[in-house]
Every structure is written in C-alpha cells, then in structure tokens.
Image (cartoon, rainbow, N blue to C red; front, side, top):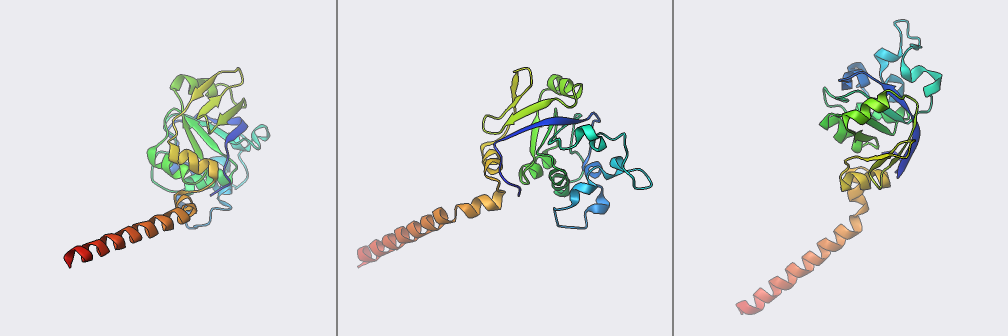
Length: 207
C-alpha cells in the first residue's frame, strides 16, 4: 500500500460521465499482471488513446492543465461493474489519491480503501458544483473527514474509523494486523497462562 496521508491538497480533474465502470477504468485485457507499478499507463486506456496509440488530446487526463492533479471528480455511480483491485491500483499509479462522486460502487469503494485511494461520496448538488468548476483546488482532511472548498465552505464525508486509520498509517488490513503482533502475542500468552491456572485449580479440586 502507498504511504499514509492525513490530507490531500490538489486541483481537480473532472470526468463528467456517469456510470464509469471498472472496465473503463482498467480494461480487462490489462488484468494479466499482479504488479501494481506501471498500471497507471493503462488507466482509462480506451479513452486516453486514439486508434493509432497516440494520446487523445481531448481527454481530460491528457490535457497539460490537469497534469499532477490528485483528485478526480466523476459523475454519479463511479466504479460500477466487475470487481477488480486493478482499478484502484491503476488510479493510484496514475497519481490520484481521491475520487469524488455522489455515488461510488461498494466493491470499488472497498478495494480503494484497501489500496490507499480515498473514495468520497458527496451530495448531488455539491457534485454538480464541482463538475462545473474543473481545476479548482480542494483540501481533503482525512482526520476530520471533511472536504474543504476554496470559498471557505466544507462538507463532511463518510469514512469508517478502521479505513481512516489504514489511510493515515499507510497500511492495508494485513499490514494493520501485523503491526499488532506484539499485542496479539501478549494476549495469547495471558490466555494460555489463565487456562493453565484454571486447569491446575481443577486438578487440585479433583483430588
């Protein structure tokens, strides 16, 4: 998983399309690898490149003004379709840290949170406003679970405590558990000692 982060400050890149599915995010023909690095060049492949393989100058992510943008604002129902962790892998390798929409598919959302990509769901009115203002700078505060707009307004977004901890610390579920090994071993030792003590007491009473 990528390094942890407590906030994202970036200009937005906007894709107004609705129902952007995982096959559009990363076409199925690129799922033959289990390596995350390098998948960014295939993100939105069929939109980013023309038939001859050259970049499509009309596609938003290819425009020089959007270079380096870390926040994607997309139309309703982002990440729908088949389950594939390659989708958030491709987006993070592309340099994105957050995706904002009024509806984000559950499986894509779960996969994103496991892989360092923050999916943010906002009300449709706010999304429409963001879609109409491409390139504005937003600040996302992971600790506060708030999205801050340039005019001083802010909006909360849902994020459960465990996912928040993983994003802040830059770990996935397995990484989080591995960090608790000392506590787990301590618990197992105390439990084993308690069970042994209980067994010894039973033996004494049995006599």
